[in-house]
Length: 234
Image (cartoon, rainbow, N blue to C red):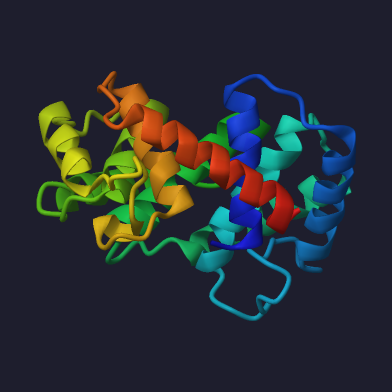
């Protein structure tokens, strides 16, 4: 995982448990965010990532950075520059012709979230309806994954478009991919735990009130992971 993803996950965990970030860590995080922001306004996932890549790869990074600023209740030049970049590039990022459920569905949720959070207009009502209808059309045949389930739940929560969510299918998928240590692997494949996939899996189980299996093992893995984030990422 990249540095920004690790920091975001750490902040999400602090926020979920209503814990304040220690002052020294806050200062280090804000310094890192300043280094990771490009002159155009978007954020890289780590300090070595190029700023000349595909614009779509920077949207999630930038949303995560804005989430971190929001946790600290900061609205400043950095956040305004990031929002201006998003405003200027939203229509170039989304594939209206052949949208993908996970990437463009996630963009749809992110855009809706940012519009509501920052009271800005990124898509017209016509564009929003067009993209929503196309996402609904490709959803039924899209392969199962935690990314798919998380995307659909996010879209339903933010736009209330009524995509069907089968709790039993999701529960069976999660039980079939969960590792012995309680965590979850990237793309649901292999024996190597992935932090972001595990976070999304736990988030989904909580949202759907599903029982979390291997809870003791998972709590230990999460504790170890938070320690690594603190020692390595920051």
